[in-house]
Length: 529
Image (cartoon, rainbow, N blue to C red; front, side, top):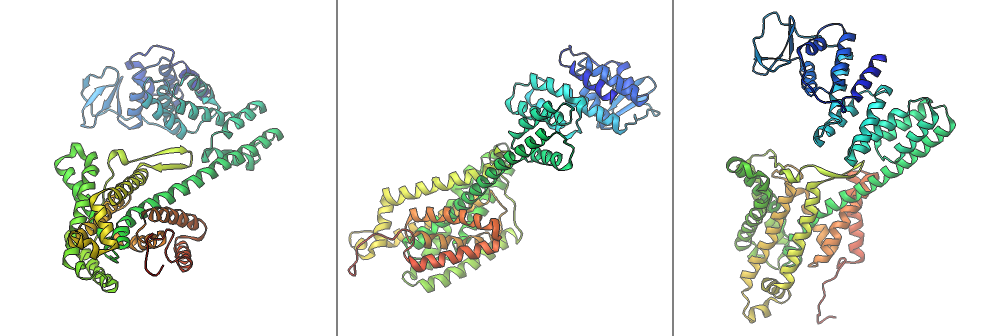
Protein backbone atom coordinates (compact mmCIF):
# COMPACT_ATOMS: atom_id res chain seq x y z
CA UNK A 1 0.00 0.00 0.00
CA UNK A 2 2.86 2.39 0.83
CA UNK A 3 4.43 1.78 -2.56
CA UNK A 4 1.14 2.45 -4.35
CA UNK A 5 0.67 5.65 -2.36
CA UNK A 6 4.15 6.77 -3.32
CA UNK A 7 3.39 5.98 -6.97
CA UNK A 8 0.17 8.01 -6.87
CA UNK A 9 1.88 10.95 -5.19
CA UNK A 10 4.70 10.87 -7.72
CA UNK A 11 2.32 10.76 -10.66
CA UNK A 12 0.48 13.81 -9.33
CA UNK A 13 3.59 15.86 -9.91
CA UNK A 14 4.07 14.63 -13.47
CA UNK A 15 1.91 17.25 -15.14
CA UNK A 16 3.50 20.17 -13.28
CA UNK A 17 7.15 19.41 -14.03
CA UNK A 18 8.91 19.90 -17.37
CA UNK A 19 9.39 16.80 -19.50
CA UNK A 20 12.90 15.37 -19.78
CA UNK A 21 14.57 12.52 -21.60
CA UNK A 22 14.99 9.07 -20.11
CA UNK A 23 18.66 8.51 -19.20
CA UNK A 24 20.58 5.25 -19.11
CA UNK A 25 20.65 5.02 -15.30
CA UNK A 26 16.88 5.41 -15.04
CA UNK A 27 16.26 2.85 -17.78
CA UNK A 28 18.50 0.33 -16.00
CA UNK A 29 16.99 1.03 -12.58
CA UNK A 30 13.47 0.32 -13.91
CA UNK A 31 14.53 -2.80 -15.85
CA UNK A 32 16.84 -4.52 -13.33
CA UNK A 33 16.94 -5.07 -9.59
CA UNK A 34 14.43 -6.09 -6.97
CA UNK A 35 10.78 -5.18 -7.36
CA UNK A 36 10.66 -2.44 -4.71
CA UNK A 37 13.70 -0.67 -6.11
CA UNK A 38 12.35 -0.82 -9.66
CA UNK A 39 8.96 0.59 -8.60
CA UNK A 40 10.78 3.34 -6.65
CA UNK A 41 12.76 4.23 -9.78
CA UNK A 42 9.55 4.22 -11.81
CA UNK A 43 8.02 6.65 -9.26
CA UNK A 44 11.03 8.96 -9.54
CA UNK A 45 10.99 9.04 -13.36
CA UNK A 46 7.23 9.49 -13.49
CA UNK A 47 7.41 12.37 -11.00
CA UNK A 48 9.87 14.10 -13.32
CA UNK A 49 7.29 14.06 -16.11
CA UNK A 50 9.49 12.01 -18.41
CA UNK A 51 7.99 12.12 -21.92
CA UNK A 52 9.83 8.93 -22.93
CA UNK A 53 8.49 6.86 -20.04
CA UNK A 54 5.18 5.70 -21.62
CA UNK A 55 6.95 4.23 -24.66
CA UNK A 56 9.61 2.60 -22.50
CA UNK A 57 6.97 1.16 -20.17
CA UNK A 58 5.09 -0.26 -23.16
CA UNK A 59 8.29 -1.87 -24.46
CA UNK A 60 8.76 -3.52 -21.06
CA UNK A 61 5.18 -4.78 -21.08
CA UNK A 62 5.60 -6.10 -24.64
CA UNK A 63 8.78 -8.01 -23.72
CA UNK A 64 10.87 -5.95 -26.14
CA UNK A 65 13.52 -4.79 -23.60
CA UNK A 66 16.88 -6.50 -23.11
CA UNK A 67 19.54 -5.81 -20.46
CA UNK A 68 23.18 -6.28 -21.42
CA UNK A 69 25.43 -5.37 -18.49
CA UNK A 70 24.88 -1.67 -17.79
CA UNK A 71 23.07 -1.04 -21.07
CA UNK A 72 19.34 -1.33 -21.75
CA UNK A 73 18.26 -2.04 -25.32
CA UNK A 74 14.88 -2.08 -27.05
CA UNK A 75 14.38 -4.73 -29.74
CA UNK A 76 12.32 -3.63 -32.74
CA UNK A 77 9.99 -5.81 -34.84
CA UNK A 78 12.67 -6.37 -37.48
CA UNK A 79 15.13 -7.74 -34.90
CA UNK A 80 17.36 -4.66 -34.73
CA UNK A 81 18.07 -2.97 -31.41
CA UNK A 82 18.33 0.63 -30.20
CA UNK A 83 19.59 2.14 -26.97
CA UNK A 84 16.66 2.73 -24.60
CA UNK A 85 18.05 6.10 -23.44
CA UNK A 86 19.40 7.66 -26.64
CA UNK A 87 17.51 5.79 -29.37
CA UNK A 88 20.78 5.20 -31.22
CA UNK A 89 21.21 1.88 -33.10
CA UNK A 90 23.09 -0.72 -31.10
CA UNK A 91 24.25 -4.30 -31.50
CA UNK A 92 22.25 -6.85 -29.53
CA UNK A 93 24.66 -9.09 -27.54
CA UNK A 94 23.96 -12.79 -27.34
CA UNK A 95 23.95 -12.68 -23.52
CA UNK A 96 21.31 -9.90 -23.31
CA UNK A 97 18.52 -10.87 -20.89
CA UNK A 98 14.85 -9.99 -20.85
CA UNK A 99 13.76 -8.30 -17.58
CA UNK A 100 11.34 -10.27 -15.44
CA UNK A 101 7.97 -8.67 -14.68
CA UNK A 102 5.66 -9.77 -11.90
CA UNK A 103 2.07 -8.62 -11.45
CA UNK A 104 3.09 -5.71 -9.20
CA UNK A 105 5.48 -4.34 -11.79
CA UNK A 106 2.99 -4.78 -14.60
CA UNK A 107 0.34 -2.92 -12.62
CA UNK A 108 2.78 -0.13 -11.79
CA UNK A 109 3.84 0.22 -15.42
CA UNK A 110 0.25 0.29 -16.67
CA UNK A 111 -0.69 2.83 -14.01
CA UNK A 112 2.26 5.04 -14.95
CA UNK A 113 1.28 4.96 -18.63
CA UNK A 114 -2.33 5.85 -17.96
CA UNK A 115 -1.50 8.48 -15.34
CA UNK A 116 0.95 10.39 -17.53
CA UNK A 117 -1.49 10.31 -20.45
CA UNK A 118 -4.28 11.76 -18.28
CA UNK A 119 -2.54 15.14 -18.50
CA UNK A 120 -1.70 14.99 -22.18
CA UNK A 121 -2.68 17.90 -24.42
CA UNK A 122 -4.00 15.42 -26.98
CA UNK A 123 -7.69 14.65 -26.38
CA UNK A 124 -7.40 11.22 -28.02
CA UNK A 125 -4.55 10.25 -25.68
CA UNK A 126 -6.55 11.38 -22.65
CA UNK A 127 -9.52 9.31 -23.82
CA UNK A 128 -7.29 6.24 -24.16
CA UNK A 129 -5.86 6.95 -20.72
CA UNK A 130 -9.29 7.17 -19.08
CA UNK A 131 -10.33 3.95 -20.84
CA UNK A 132 -7.15 2.27 -19.59
CA UNK A 133 -7.69 3.48 -16.04
CA UNK A 134 -11.25 2.15 -16.02
CA UNK A 135 -9.86 -1.34 -16.69
CA UNK A 136 -7.38 -1.21 -13.80
CA UNK A 137 -8.14 -2.26 -10.22
CA UNK A 138 -8.28 1.17 -8.62
CA UNK A 139 -8.10 1.84 -4.91
CA UNK A 140 -7.71 4.82 -2.60
CA UNK A 141 -4.08 5.23 -3.67
CA UNK A 142 -5.23 6.60 -7.03
CA UNK A 143 -7.80 9.00 -5.51
CA UNK A 144 -5.49 12.07 -5.39
CA UNK A 145 -4.46 11.43 -8.99
CA UNK A 146 -8.08 11.12 -10.19
CA UNK A 147 -9.06 14.29 -8.31
CA UNK A 148 -6.19 16.18 -9.93
CA UNK A 149 -7.22 14.87 -13.36
CA UNK A 150 -10.86 15.90 -12.77
CA UNK A 151 -9.73 19.43 -12.00
CA UNK A 152 -7.47 19.63 -15.06
CA UNK A 153 -9.83 18.01 -17.59
CA UNK A 154 -11.59 20.35 -20.06
CA UNK A 155 -13.60 17.81 -22.06
CA UNK A 156 -17.08 17.41 -20.54
CA UNK A 157 -17.44 13.70 -21.33
CA UNK A 158 -14.02 12.76 -19.94
CA UNK A 159 -14.60 14.96 -16.91
CA UNK A 160 -17.83 13.06 -16.20
CA UNK A 161 -16.06 9.69 -16.55
CA UNK A 162 -13.27 10.78 -14.21
CA UNK A 163 -15.89 12.09 -11.79
CA UNK A 164 -17.54 8.65 -11.72
CA UNK A 165 -14.13 7.05 -11.05
CA UNK A 166 -13.58 9.49 -8.19
CA UNK A 167 -17.02 8.77 -6.72
CA UNK A 168 -16.40 5.02 -7.02
CA UNK A 169 -13.17 5.33 -5.05
CA UNK A 170 -14.88 7.53 -2.43
CA UNK A 171 -17.34 4.70 -1.69
CA UNK A 172 -14.54 2.90 0.14
CA UNK A 173 -13.30 5.77 2.32
CA UNK A 174 -13.96 5.87 6.07
CA UNK A 175 -15.81 9.19 6.15
CA UNK A 176 -19.62 8.59 5.83
CA UNK A 177 -20.12 12.15 4.54
CA UNK A 178 -17.77 11.51 1.65
CA UNK A 179 -19.45 8.19 0.89
CA UNK A 180 -22.84 9.92 0.92
CA UNK A 181 -21.59 12.57 -1.51
CA UNK A 182 -20.17 9.83 -3.73
CA UNK A 183 -23.51 8.00 -3.81
CA UNK A 184 -25.34 11.20 -4.75
CA UNK A 185 -22.84 11.82 -7.54
CA UNK A 186 -23.18 8.28 -8.90
CA UNK A 187 -26.99 8.42 -8.82
CA UNK A 188 -26.96 10.82 -11.75
CA UNK A 189 -24.83 8.59 -13.98
CA UNK A 190 -27.45 6.23 -15.37
CA UNK A 191 -24.74 3.64 -16.09
CA UNK A 192 -25.51 -0.10 -15.76
CA UNK A 193 -22.05 -0.69 -14.29
CA UNK A 194 -22.65 1.97 -11.64
CA UNK A 195 -25.99 0.40 -10.73
CA UNK A 196 -24.27 -2.99 -10.34
CA UNK A 197 -21.57 -1.40 -8.15
CA UNK A 198 -24.09 0.32 -5.86
CA UNK A 199 -26.30 -2.78 -5.69
CA UNK A 200 -23.33 -4.96 -4.77
CA UNK A 201 -22.32 -2.61 -1.96
CA UNK A 202 -25.91 -2.53 -0.75
CA UNK A 203 -26.34 -6.32 -0.82
CA UNK A 204 -22.93 -7.22 0.57
CA UNK A 205 -23.50 -5.44 3.85
CA UNK A 206 -20.23 -3.51 3.52
CA UNK A 207 -22.09 -0.27 4.14
CA UNK A 208 -22.87 0.15 7.84
CA UNK A 209 -24.13 3.73 7.94
CA UNK A 210 -27.94 3.81 7.79
CA UNK A 211 -28.10 7.16 5.98
CA UNK A 212 -25.70 5.99 3.30
CA UNK A 213 -27.68 2.76 2.86
CA UNK A 214 -30.85 4.78 2.26
CA UNK A 215 -28.97 6.90 -0.28
CA UNK A 216 -27.68 3.74 -1.95
CA UNK A 217 -31.20 2.37 -2.34
CA UNK A 218 -32.43 5.71 -3.68
CA UNK A 219 -29.55 5.89 -6.15
CA UNK A 220 -30.18 2.35 -7.41
CA UNK A 221 -33.85 3.18 -7.97
CA UNK A 222 -32.98 6.40 -9.83
CA UNK A 223 -30.52 4.61 -12.12
CA UNK A 224 -33.01 1.82 -12.82
CA UNK A 225 -35.59 4.43 -13.77
CA UNK A 226 -33.18 5.98 -16.29
CA UNK A 227 -32.22 2.58 -17.67
CA UNK A 228 -35.91 1.72 -18.10
CA UNK A 229 -36.36 4.79 -20.27
CA UNK A 230 -33.37 3.73 -22.33
CA UNK A 231 -34.94 0.31 -22.85
CA UNK A 232 -38.27 1.85 -23.89
CA UNK A 233 -36.64 4.24 -26.34
CA UNK A 234 -34.48 1.42 -27.69
CA UNK A 235 -37.58 -0.70 -28.27
CA UNK A 236 -39.28 2.19 -30.05
CA UNK A 237 -36.24 2.82 -32.24
CA UNK A 238 -35.96 -0.88 -33.10
CA UNK A 239 -39.64 -0.92 -34.07
CA UNK A 240 -39.23 2.18 -36.24
CA UNK A 241 -36.17 0.63 -37.84
CA UNK A 242 -38.08 -2.55 -38.68
CA UNK A 243 -41.03 -0.45 -39.85
CA UNK A 244 -38.81 1.57 -42.19
CA UNK A 245 -37.50 -1.66 -43.72
CA UNK A 246 -41.08 -2.89 -44.19
CA UNK A 247 -41.99 0.50 -45.66
CA UNK A 248 -39.24 0.25 -48.26
CA UNK A 249 -40.23 -3.32 -49.04
CA UNK A 250 -43.94 -2.46 -49.29
CA UNK A 251 -43.67 0.74 -51.35
CA UNK A 252 -42.99 -1.21 -54.52
CA UNK A 253 -45.92 -3.50 -53.78
CA UNK A 254 -48.12 -0.47 -53.19
CA UNK A 255 -47.61 0.28 -56.89
CA UNK A 256 -47.53 -3.18 -58.49
CA UNK A 257 -50.30 -4.62 -56.31
CA UNK A 258 -52.09 -1.59 -54.94
CA UNK A 259 -52.30 0.42 -58.17
CA UNK A 260 -51.94 -2.26 -60.84
CA UNK A 261 -53.61 -5.24 -59.12
CA UNK A 262 -50.68 -7.60 -59.82
CA UNK A 263 -49.90 -10.11 -57.08
CA UNK A 264 -46.13 -10.21 -57.59
CA UNK A 265 -44.68 -13.10 -55.59
CA UNK A 266 -41.24 -12.29 -57.05
CA UNK A 267 -41.15 -8.91 -55.29
CA UNK A 268 -38.77 -10.26 -52.65
CA UNK A 269 -36.42 -11.48 -55.38
CA UNK A 270 -36.37 -7.97 -56.88
CA UNK A 271 -35.16 -6.80 -53.47
CA UNK A 272 -32.53 -9.53 -53.63
CA UNK A 273 -31.36 -8.22 -57.02
CA UNK A 274 -30.93 -4.74 -55.54
CA UNK A 275 -28.88 -6.18 -52.69
CA UNK A 276 -26.63 -8.15 -55.05
CA UNK A 277 -26.21 -5.05 -57.22
CA UNK A 278 -24.94 -3.25 -54.10
CA UNK A 279 -22.53 -6.13 -53.46
CA UNK A 280 -21.19 -5.89 -57.03
CA UNK A 281 -20.69 -2.12 -56.76
CA UNK A 282 -18.87 -2.63 -53.46
CA UNK A 283 -16.51 -5.12 -55.11
CA UNK A 284 -15.80 -2.77 -58.01
CA UNK A 285 -15.00 0.10 -55.67
CA UNK A 286 -12.77 -2.10 -53.52
CA UNK A 287 -10.83 -3.25 -56.60
CA UNK A 288 -10.65 -0.10 -58.72
CA UNK A 289 -11.40 2.86 -56.40
CA UNK A 290 -10.27 1.83 -52.91
CA UNK A 291 -9.60 5.45 -51.91
CA UNK A 292 -13.27 6.31 -52.57
CA UNK A 293 -14.70 3.18 -50.96
CA UNK A 294 -16.87 5.13 -48.50
CA UNK A 295 -18.81 6.57 -51.45
CA UNK A 296 -19.81 3.22 -52.95
CA UNK A 297 -23.28 3.31 -51.36
CA UNK A 298 -24.11 6.55 -53.18
CA UNK A 299 -23.35 4.82 -56.48
CA UNK A 300 -25.04 1.57 -55.44
CA UNK A 301 -28.41 3.28 -54.85
CA UNK A 302 -29.12 4.17 -58.52
CA UNK A 303 -27.47 0.95 -59.71
CA UNK A 304 -29.73 -1.15 -57.47
CA UNK A 305 -32.78 0.77 -58.68
CA UNK A 306 -31.90 0.35 -62.36
CA UNK A 307 -30.96 -3.33 -62.02
CA UNK A 308 -34.25 -4.24 -60.34
CA UNK A 309 -36.25 -1.96 -62.66
CA UNK A 310 -34.79 -3.61 -65.78
CA UNK A 311 -35.58 -7.07 -64.45
CA UNK A 312 -39.09 -5.86 -63.59
CA UNK A 313 -39.57 -4.44 -67.09
CA UNK A 314 -38.49 -7.75 -68.61
CA UNK A 315 -40.93 -9.62 -66.35
CA UNK A 316 -43.81 -7.33 -67.30
CA UNK A 317 -43.18 -7.35 -71.03
CA UNK A 318 -42.61 -11.09 -71.28
CA UNK A 319 -45.16 -12.62 -68.89
CA UNK A 320 -47.23 -10.30 -66.70
CA UNK A 321 -48.67 -8.18 -69.53
CA UNK A 322 -50.66 -11.25 -70.65
CA UNK A 323 -52.11 -11.88 -67.20
CA UNK A 324 -53.70 -8.57 -66.16
CA UNK A 325 -57.08 -9.18 -64.54
CA UNK A 326 -56.18 -12.81 -63.76
CA UNK A 327 -54.74 -12.67 -60.20
CA UNK A 328 -54.42 -16.42 -59.64
CA UNK A 329 -52.41 -16.95 -62.84
CA UNK A 330 -50.28 -13.90 -61.99
CA UNK A 331 -49.55 -15.29 -58.54
CA UNK A 332 -48.44 -18.66 -59.92
CA UNK A 333 -46.38 -17.12 -62.72
CA UNK A 334 -44.51 -14.69 -60.48
CA UNK A 335 -43.91 -17.44 -57.92
CA UNK A 336 -42.25 -19.46 -60.68
CA UNK A 337 -40.22 -16.39 -61.65
CA UNK A 338 -39.07 -16.02 -58.04
CA UNK A 339 -37.69 -19.57 -58.10
CA UNK A 340 -35.89 -18.87 -61.36
CA UNK A 341 -34.31 -15.68 -59.97
CA UNK A 342 -33.22 -17.41 -56.77
CA UNK A 343 -31.53 -20.19 -58.71
CA UNK A 344 -29.91 -17.67 -61.07
CA UNK A 345 -28.33 -15.84 -58.13
CA UNK A 346 -27.13 -19.13 -56.69
CA UNK A 347 -25.51 -20.01 -60.00
CA UNK A 348 -23.81 -16.61 -60.32
CA UNK A 349 -22.81 -15.78 -56.73
CA UNK A 350 -23.06 -19.14 -54.98
CA UNK A 351 -25.47 -20.46 -52.38
CA UNK A 352 -23.66 -18.88 -49.42
CA UNK A 353 -24.37 -15.39 -48.17
CA UNK A 354 -22.00 -12.67 -49.32
CA UNK A 355 -20.93 -9.84 -46.98
CA UNK A 356 -21.60 -6.18 -47.73
CA UNK A 357 -19.46 -3.84 -45.66
CA UNK A 358 -20.75 -0.58 -44.25
CA UNK A 359 -18.85 2.54 -45.35
CA UNK A 360 -17.08 4.44 -42.62
CA UNK A 361 -19.81 7.04 -42.24
CA UNK A 362 -22.42 4.33 -41.63
CA UNK A 363 -20.33 2.43 -39.06
CA UNK A 364 -20.75 2.91 -35.34
CA UNK A 365 -23.58 4.75 -33.69
CA UNK A 366 -24.65 7.46 -31.29
CA UNK A 367 -25.35 6.75 -27.60
CA UNK A 368 -27.82 9.31 -26.20
CA UNK A 369 -28.24 7.17 -23.06
CA UNK A 370 -25.96 4.73 -21.27
CA UNK A 371 -27.93 1.67 -22.42
CA UNK A 372 -29.19 3.06 -25.74
CA UNK A 373 -27.07 2.95 -28.89
CA UNK A 374 -28.58 4.10 -32.19
CA UNK A 375 -26.57 2.59 -35.08
CA UNK A 376 -25.83 4.98 -37.92
CA UNK A 377 -26.86 2.43 -40.56
CA UNK A 378 -30.30 2.04 -38.97
CA UNK A 379 -30.75 5.81 -38.72
CA UNK A 380 -29.73 6.14 -42.37
CA UNK A 381 -32.30 3.52 -43.43
CA UNK A 382 -35.09 5.36 -41.60
CA UNK A 383 -34.15 8.63 -43.31
CA UNK A 384 -33.71 6.88 -46.67
CA UNK A 385 -37.13 5.22 -46.41
CA UNK A 386 -38.89 8.54 -45.92
CA UNK A 387 -36.91 10.16 -48.74
CA UNK A 388 -37.99 7.36 -51.08
CA UNK A 389 -41.57 7.72 -49.83
CA UNK A 390 -41.54 11.48 -50.54
CA UNK A 391 -40.12 10.87 -54.03
CA UNK A 392 -42.78 8.23 -54.84
CA UNK A 393 -45.60 10.46 -53.53
CA UNK A 394 -44.41 13.37 -55.65
CA UNK A 395 -44.01 11.10 -58.68
CA UNK A 396 -47.53 9.69 -58.40
CA UNK A 397 -49.26 12.96 -57.50
CA UNK A 398 -47.29 15.64 -59.38
CA UNK A 399 -45.78 14.20 -62.56
CA UNK A 400 -47.12 13.28 -65.98
CA UNK A 401 -46.16 9.63 -65.47
CA UNK A 402 -48.06 9.59 -62.16
CA UNK A 403 -51.11 11.09 -63.85
CA UNK A 404 -51.02 8.42 -66.55
CA UNK A 405 -50.57 5.65 -63.97
CA UNK A 406 -53.56 6.87 -61.98
CA UNK A 407 -55.60 7.25 -65.17
CA UNK A 408 -54.81 3.76 -66.45
CA UNK A 409 -55.48 2.31 -63.00
CA UNK A 410 -58.91 3.92 -62.68
CA UNK A 411 -60.15 3.47 -66.25
CA UNK A 412 -57.89 1.76 -68.74
CA UNK A 413 -60.26 2.08 -71.75
CA UNK A 414 -60.89 5.78 -71.24
CA UNK A 415 -57.17 6.42 -70.83
CA UNK A 416 -56.52 4.60 -74.12
CA UNK A 417 -59.26 6.62 -75.81
CA UNK A 418 -57.56 9.92 -74.93
CA UNK A 419 -54.25 8.77 -76.37
CA UNK A 420 -52.42 7.18 -73.40
CA UNK A 421 -50.16 4.29 -74.39
CA UNK A 422 -51.47 1.92 -71.71
CA UNK A 423 -49.00 -0.87 -72.46
CA UNK A 424 -46.06 1.52 -72.05
CA UNK A 425 -47.49 2.93 -68.81
CA UNK A 426 -47.95 -0.62 -67.46
CA UNK A 427 -44.28 -1.36 -68.11
CA UNK A 428 -43.09 1.92 -66.59
CA UNK A 429 -45.29 1.51 -63.50
CA UNK A 430 -44.19 -2.07 -62.93
CA UNK A 431 -40.55 -1.07 -63.45
CA UNK A 432 -40.98 1.71 -60.91
CA UNK A 433 -42.33 -0.74 -58.32
CA UNK A 434 -39.50 -3.17 -59.10
CA UNK A 435 -36.91 -0.37 -58.83
CA UNK A 436 -38.20 0.62 -55.40
CA UNK A 437 -37.83 -3.02 -54.36
CA UNK A 438 -34.21 -2.78 -55.52
CA UNK A 439 -33.73 0.26 -53.28
CA UNK A 440 -35.10 -1.79 -50.38
CA UNK A 441 -32.53 -4.48 -51.14
CA UNK A 442 -29.76 -1.88 -51.19
CA UNK A 443 -30.85 -0.68 -47.75
CA UNK A 444 -31.13 -4.22 -46.39
CA UNK A 445 -27.58 -4.98 -47.50
CA UNK A 446 -26.33 -2.45 -44.92
CA UNK A 447 -27.82 -4.30 -41.95
CA UNK A 448 -27.15 -7.93 -42.84
CA UNK A 449 -25.56 -10.35 -45.26
CA UNK A 450 -26.87 -10.77 -48.79
CA UNK A 451 -28.07 -14.18 -49.94
CA UNK A 452 -30.41 -15.81 -52.47
CA UNK A 453 -33.17 -16.11 -49.86
CA UNK A 454 -33.01 -12.50 -48.68
CA UNK A 455 -36.39 -11.51 -50.11
CA UNK A 456 -38.29 -14.47 -48.69
CA UNK A 457 -38.14 -12.95 -45.20
CA UNK A 458 -40.04 -9.82 -46.23
CA UNK A 459 -42.53 -10.75 -48.97
CA UNK A 460 -45.34 -11.89 -46.62
CA UNK A 461 -44.89 -8.91 -44.29
CA UNK A 462 -44.88 -6.57 -47.29
CA UNK A 463 -48.23 -7.89 -48.50
CA UNK A 464 -49.62 -7.58 -44.99
CA UNK A 465 -48.53 -3.93 -44.87
CA UNK A 466 -50.19 -3.12 -48.21
CA UNK A 467 -53.43 -4.91 -47.33
CA UNK A 468 -53.62 -3.42 -43.84
CA UNK A 469 -52.86 0.09 -45.05
CA UNK A 470 -55.41 0.01 -47.84
CA UNK A 471 -54.88 -1.01 -51.46
CA UNK A 472 -53.32 1.85 -53.44
CA UNK A 473 -52.92 4.16 -50.43
CA UNK A 474 -49.38 5.38 -49.72
CA UNK A 475 -50.39 7.01 -46.43
CA UNK A 476 -51.90 3.73 -45.26
CA UNK A 477 -48.72 1.92 -46.28
CA UNK A 478 -46.62 4.25 -44.11
CA UNK A 479 -48.84 3.91 -41.03
CA UNK A 480 -49.20 0.15 -41.45
CA UNK A 481 -45.45 -0.42 -41.91
CA UNK A 482 -44.38 1.65 -38.91
CA UNK A 483 -47.26 0.37 -36.79
CA UNK A 484 -46.54 -3.27 -37.54
CA UNK A 485 -42.82 -2.75 -36.90
CA UNK A 486 -43.39 -1.22 -33.46
CA UNK A 487 -46.18 -3.69 -32.58
CA UNK A 488 -44.01 -6.65 -33.55
CA UNK A 489 -41.12 -5.48 -31.33
CA UNK A 490 -43.45 -4.77 -28.42
CA UNK A 491 -44.91 -8.27 -28.63
CA UNK A 492 -41.47 -9.87 -28.99
CA UNK A 493 -40.53 -8.44 -25.61
CA UNK A 494 -42.82 -10.78 -23.68
CA UNK A 495 -44.02 -13.39 -26.18
CA UNK A 496 -40.92 -14.22 -28.24
CA UNK A 497 -40.34 -13.79 -31.97
CA UNK A 498 -42.49 -16.71 -33.17
CA UNK A 499 -45.51 -15.98 -31.01
CA UNK A 500 -45.21 -12.29 -31.83
CA UNK A 501 -45.51 -13.08 -35.57
CA UNK A 502 -48.57 -15.24 -34.92
CA UNK A 503 -50.22 -12.58 -32.80
CA UNK A 504 -49.61 -9.91 -35.45
CA UNK A 505 -51.09 -12.17 -38.12
CA UNK A 506 -54.16 -12.87 -36.00
CA UNK A 507 -54.59 -9.14 -35.41
CA UNK A 508 -54.47 -8.41 -39.14
CA UNK A 509 -56.95 -11.19 -39.95
CA UNK A 510 -59.42 -9.85 -37.40
CA UNK A 511 -58.89 -6.27 -38.56
CA UNK A 512 -59.45 -7.13 -42.24
CA UNK A 513 -62.65 -8.98 -41.34
CA UNK A 514 -63.99 -5.86 -39.67
CA UNK A 515 -62.58 -3.41 -42.24
CA UNK A 516 -61.84 -5.14 -45.55
CA UNK A 517 -60.75 -1.92 -47.29
CA UNK A 518 -57.87 -1.45 -44.80
CA UNK A 519 -56.98 1.67 -42.87
CA UNK A 520 -57.67 3.97 -45.81
CA UNK A 521 -60.27 3.08 -48.43
CA UNK A 522 -59.81 4.00 -52.09
CA UNK A 523 -61.85 7.13 -52.86
CA UNK A 524 -64.07 7.11 -55.94
CA UNK A 525 -67.58 6.77 -57.34
CA UNK A 526 -69.29 3.69 -58.66
CA UNK A 527 -72.66 2.85 -60.13
CA UNK A 528 -73.49 0.66 -57.13
CA UNK A 529 -72.87 3.47 -54.59
